[in-house]
Image 1 (cartoon, helix red, strand yellow):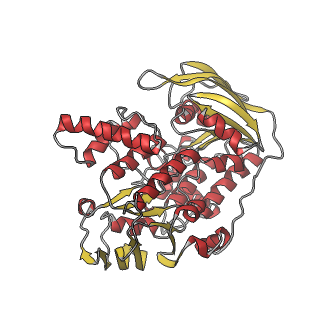
Image 2 (cartoon, rainbow, N blue to C red):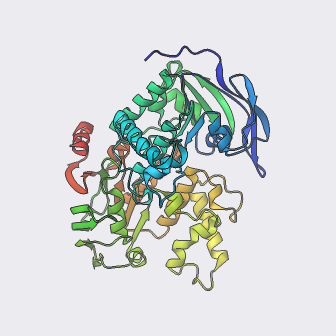
Image 3 (cartoon, helix red, strand yellow):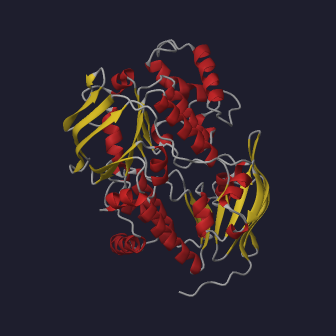
Length: 504
């Protein structure tokens, strides 16, 4: 495939400004994109990256500034207009109809002729594209029954098959494994070489350094610099993004105690009747982070749901120190025993975006009657505790406690979830992809809180498709594959050994 010679800018965003009320999200930003390039956009949560891309994708209208496509000024009045101009976006939070199949979700956005013949042809095209990029996905399965990883694959396929020539990728590999990410970037490089222009919004610096032709760094709604990866080291890039260097070193427990929770022969079935978990048995001790590594869609979500009582066990027992078998308890009863859950999809399962920050924080306290009862809430105490927690957890973007939770950036929303879940001093923490989509600083803060809880005696089950995170934090590592724990390692262990167990 001949590589496109880069010439004039395909997209020029000139002096773009966007405010939300009194909050200035984008301040006189100028950004350009050249045909055939992969352009990484970096910055902390709240730096303005997503807002800028939402303007380009027609989701937000800029207050000031103009956008040029191929040198011609365009007025992008909405997502449909953006799509007609060849602009496609894979969002961090997915835009899918949960009751539809993956195939039908793709069909909604991809032209496919008459319904029956078109769907047959589209199915062949999708299967061919998945084979090309190494995606494993049941396209006839309801999206609501797919894992987070599988849902992201649907979003990526929608854009790839929609014929976009300008592709915006918002944290595209956040839930992909190392091997899946390699296949994904191979596809992206092929697209760029064929003439597409790709904007990669990511917190993964290695991705930007390894795959981007140019890197633009945003901070505080402004562009700090645009450079090429050859211009600076990863450490210098971190300084550019946040003004300091955060060093990630393995943080292993120094004081693992007695057995805290024992999972014995857990088995569940999925919605279609197939076995989701197969005889899962493992022990998690107090003062330990037990990491679950694996390719997405291999039972991670089902395991977390079963432990928290959100789905029913077919067989097996969950023995919790001092409480016996808790497998028949309701979720609220398990919470009263000291279990808390940080789900992979915080927007869908951990936050009520239209409720206030205080209301979101107070929910778990109300279950414990800390703020009175549901009929008579002590609002003053709830606000006081929420304010203290937000300061302790350094939650930014809080103008007042009555603002909606949906107004927070991803990292600050996650810190809100963790501050709430940790407010009960839990003894067992289930954390599913806790740093997914977070920037460097927020990721470090979230991981530090997990280690602090462990060091204070909690047992932590860390479920993550980010192998770096598993290796960095885990004292013991179990590999889940096909709904079973197929291997177990004591830290430190070799990355390649875990990788082999994940795919074999």
